[in-house]
Length: 306
Length: 306
Image (cartoon, rainbow over all chains, first blue to last red; front, side, top):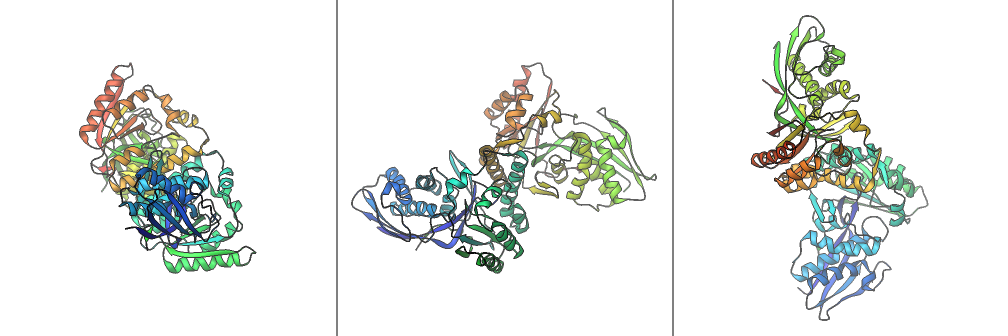
């Protein structure tokens, strides 16, 4: 195989109760990338569509991730990368992760699959670091593993692949405002109330249990966040209105996707997820803010060859 | 049925990563109680062996718990309680919980089992409050549900029964020193580092996943605690030595049982659990402190009728 075309999905990190550790993978919404083997022993970005991103390999998220796997594998050939961005950078649904994880997945295929998903996550984190300044795996892991993931630790990297209840759907709203990841990080306190932390780890435990037991009610009761949401929700206009509308429309739980501004809702079937979409469209339609909404199943496969 | 004799087991709360929410139930180690129906419509404690505890019903943990269920059920008869304490009060393996949960379990049997385990937990918490000043469920839940439990919330009370890997054994050492629960609570900070809290909820999530997947390695890697152990371990002489000895002997993880002074170790089979016992006996034998050790399987049944 000398050329591969892939779909690299958007992802939701944090998932209310699991700040910095939980994530899940979306279907339909994602970038496309074409990676070709070349005779020249280097990495080149030859095409970028859909976003204004640097062609310099070290400064490009996909480029930096590609370099990481390339320098480890040391093949006697190189790679050309074409990037077709469909996820808007800064949307909070893992735009940089899609680029970073997509490129390492594709190169691994062209190399003959010498690396496992955890190793690929490690390479992709080098790309993510170009975008966010530090190496996170909470968006990369769900893209590479599919479904729900828990990043148990980053040093050493340990990713758990969690079960996905069959009927789970996500509704996403992306208000077209800018929330800088650095600002969303800076706004968080360095210390948190022990009592809130206890509630949070009870919820992470019950969330994982709910995934294993297909317990949608418990899933709903676990999707809570007293640690991060009270701070970051202030950066997203009408967050509380969206949340109320989504829950009233039957959603299991609503929270900030990554560091925002996108907001996710989980629902137990497609019909409810579409009702949630209508309800939150209704909230934002009354404002001046442009927005997009999406409804999709949880993607248990992750990145796909197309 | 007019009379019932039960075995009410010792329990381990917190389980390293799950402060205030996780617990598991021990086998063999526990109190015995005999409860009899009486014509007089009240609760009486007629016998207490093995510990110096009050006979006044309201001031006795079992008495207060019995009152709670009795006043809710309002039967046209009363109950006499005999308590045979084998778990030393203040040992940190749920002595008061054994009394509180044992009595409500037994009375529920004599009433014809109108209450479920969550309701019984609620009644038993009234007894626990007599001992600790506040209503905790982290020792009561494993006694009443058996196996591993997660107290998702106390208001409203929600207890999850988690799966127990078949070959899991516990080794307990009870150094005969006094650690007051109130002091062990007061020593804890009101606020904790967000980074430590994140590690803790990653560990609770991975612990629950490990129980569901019988993953002993992951169980081992999840049994960590940067929140409470650094403070409370100072109240337990030679804690670090015990921990090192237990891990070197093959234990999966070692931590403080409840608020101490007992220390628990989980192992993946009986032989390892006994090797752990020898190793920690060796540590304490060199000191002036009296101690007891126990090895037992995880008790998935909880309180038993004998």
